[in-house]
Image 1: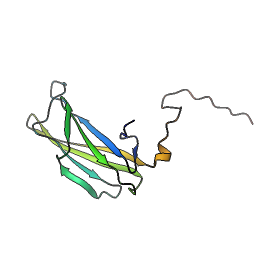
Image 2 (image 1 turned 135 degrees about the vertical axis):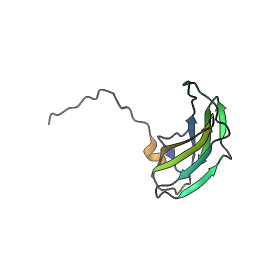
Image 3 (image 1 turned 180 degrees about the vertical axis):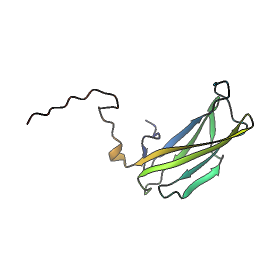
Image 4 (image 1 turned 90 degrees about the vertical axis):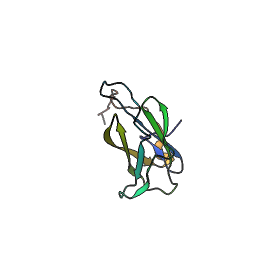
Length: 121
């Protein structure tokens, strides 16, 4: 299973994606390939800004695969995307969570699930 923003495991690749839309609400391509910038926990730029490696995988949908360093600091990193859509400059900022593989195991309870609590002694 590919690593995503929820779990970017140290020493593995994470796929970062962005979807652009036009004024009509439909997916639309950017005027040119978007540039991505990746910053670590301290706000230090580790990649970019660059459009090298940014792939268009569908209409308006772009992806960048980042190799998370094995010794990367755990926590929320930032990926910023800069592009122009129909002549309008846009900047989108997202976060992805860098974790150890051992802390990335899937649980059985998800947000919105009913959880049975036993308050007896």
